[in-house]
Amino acid sequence: MLNFDLAYARGEFRLDASAQIAGGVTGICGPSGSGKSTLLLLIAGLLKPQGGSLHFGDEMLVDRARRMFVPAWRRHFGLVFQDGQLFPHMSVRDNLLYGHARLAAEGRLFPLDTVLQLLEIGHLLDRRPAMLSGGERQRVALGRALLYSPRLLLLDEPLSSLDDRLKQQILPFLRRVKDETRIPMLYVTHARPEVDFLADRVLLMDRGRLAPESRASNTAHA
Ligand SMILES: Nc1ncnc2c1ncn2[C@@H]1O[C@H](COP(=O)(O)OP(=O)(O)OP(=O)(O)O)[C@@H](O)[C@H]1O
Image (cartoon, rainbow, N blue to C red; front, side):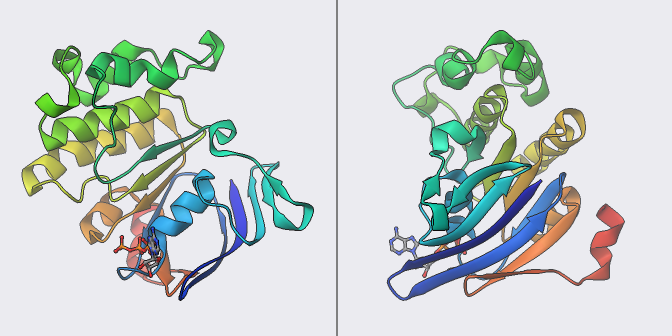
């Protein structure tokens, strides 16, 4: 599904990461500052690598040797970051429909009602993001990413700012998204239980390098 070999340097930090990743949910774990968020930004097209290549299926998105770089908006990937990053001046409805409304009807994976039901956010449509709880904001951010009908979901610690009760509320939603939509996901987290619950495999990031995790326990989740 995703195949990359990316080199990126910023100050002292060096990322030199390669992997071939199949569909399903791939957890990415590793110490703080090891480069997990940087890797997601490189895959999203929000950072440009200094070297290497990136393929999504047969499609070449980056090939620095040929000076090729497909910009983020043309990759059609969905992103959910820690703080949700909703548009503060727009209602929940307008946030949710922001990407969706621009898609051709045949490109939409699911209608608004399906996502509202899946994430239980139908009662929030007329509110602004400031009027939402953290868990509601996370669900709206996820809803917006889903309604964009992405080819890949990039999730960067999407639950890390939430309390346990909210995590327990949202994790099953994510599993339903995985089971019902089959959209591949890269899921960055420090929280082992989230990975154990969701991921089909785990990659470990350490000082800018990626390696498959060898823990046998993960096969139980494949
Ligand atoms: N905007 C930035 N400008 C300069 N350096 C940065 C910036 N963002 C991150 N870094 C540095 O890049 C390196 C990788 O950071 P990154 O955020 O990718 O790590 P991470 O594994 O996601 O960490 P965490 O688990 O703490 O979120 C770190 O050394 C960090 O200090």
